[in-house]
Image (cartoon, rainbow, N blue to C red; front, side):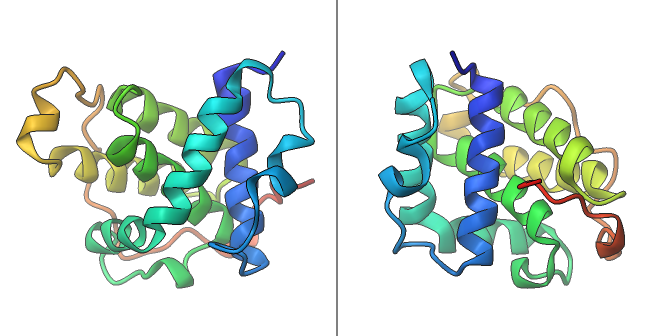
Length: 166
């Protein structure tokens, strides 16, 4: 049976695949996810899939706002997939604590991202959490870690990217 961590990793790979194949908004959930054994995580996966398809442009705007001169289409595909997952959880899945969304995204970045991805992703997601509307912050969802530094203008290097579908 799949746990939430495994479901998050699978959905990051789905986001990667959607981006590489230019299928956001056109791909069907059952074509990408249903065949995999999602176990008790099917509802989470479906909600995340629906939210990213409904709000991808807004999610990308949030990422662009804090990534200092780096637009999502210029970022490594694995890094943007991880960022989209994290921002989507923070902004659109209120039952997931912000600290969990940030920490899990950083863990995915350590495994799949470029060399500088963990710090880059932590900084951007930390800013998203800080700038959330106040009403959401007071509901008990806060980030455990503050970003170590602002997202630098130096984007993680492409050459060290690991293929998430391998």
